[in-house]
Length: 310
Length: 308
Image 1: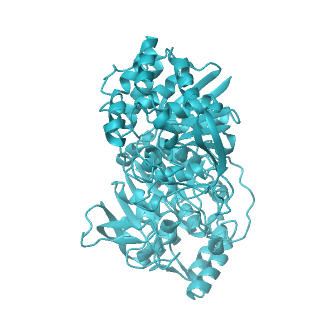
Image 2 (image 1 turned 30 degrees about the vertical axis):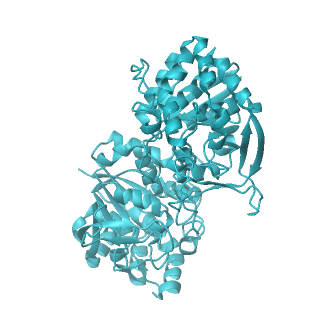
Image 3 (image 1 turned 90 degrees about the vertical axis):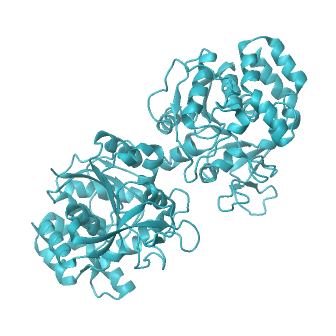
């Protein structure tokens, strides 16, 4: 039976790849999308989420709009320099036809989890504000969620949004702290693995050649993203594989090597958003989470290509 | 008809404030949302429902957030007694909680009565903060919010710098104070000393011989004693009813002015301090009105009016 997943997302170029990967994978049943600020504003990411479900013909899939800002800290600069003002690499696709659910994302998450007790895997691909709000509203959902597999954080690879912090955690460290401490089964798919898997220009060209709506969209929106990676990391057209890694980790966890350890999220000061692995368990107050430290990049890239081009 | 909503961590003084609103002519209380604060949220809800039944009202009581946004809960049993009601151990009310989450119910009420609803908050501000994060359109739809909380004169009770409601969930208070809704802050310093019911006042209340008068004194027995022992402040302090009196009868507040008010969330020493920029040195636009003083006789008259 397919794994029910609820994707919380700020699309976003790599979110787009991840959502399309999920929608095109028979192992997964996407039960809804919830949007969040991050790569761009929540208004835009909500529209993009609608666009993506329509692109794949899942017009009836529910999409709920989420938080427009972090729980307690001020809103940071959005990631529009990476993803474009429209979160779609500046390509400004036509508006979606569908409507957003008339309830906030956190409430939708609570209702879905309660409706499918023990069955839902939450897959957060952006800042964790919606997930934290859901836990705050109804702490009981923690024991009803099957697991959380999130893209975010960095155990040993340092940060990207700041020298200390990965962008999703940095955007709302308080929310991340709530989610990491909740006590549910949680897998952190962070920069330790996502930066090890590189999509080259040749790989991206191959995707584009498939000529289906999914790969055509990816082909259109990726150049802006590639330009950022070149400017910031000198990657000459290659990109890291962030959000698709988290979805792939739900499809086939064997692609990743994990280690269980507590992860402390710093919430204050210059290092806010840092995810500190407590491998030797010197701090005893955090529950352990699974941290992805190794990845079979060849298999991961093959899986993504197979699903997107088929 | 004025439309009210009460957000409360119902213990003894909250209960009297609820009673005042329910019995005040020309006011309809649309709903009561309970919050973790003086006591755990379920206990607060029981106390609120008991109070509603005592008043022979049918106001829906909604269960709210079980804990502060980022902090562990801190209760005030020491002040209000083990049941929050002076150890009176009132029976379980007959009517259950209204269906749905308090944050959702509050959100719907604010939207349905856009521009009309007046909020009175008597506890930590977690429900409001959660609602505002979930629905950013809410603050501009609220007519007025009267907050029992803070200490404009830095006269704290739970610490020297902070009043309990703000101290319990300073992050929520910060969200609420910066939300842009019209706020009147009734700080704790207005609710002590001359505002307290002294022995003669309490004798007068007892002489009314009504169930409301007896309830007010009985459920606040622990509070009366603790106020003396803990703060050296003789008499029965009723911060929530004072605040409710200001909301019901604005003339109870005798001096008010608008300022930039910020809430300390980082420090341990001054956690939850409400920093009022009285002289405007920060050059920030005002975000709250501060009640600096009240007319004790007028507040007590408001109370007596509903207890008689």
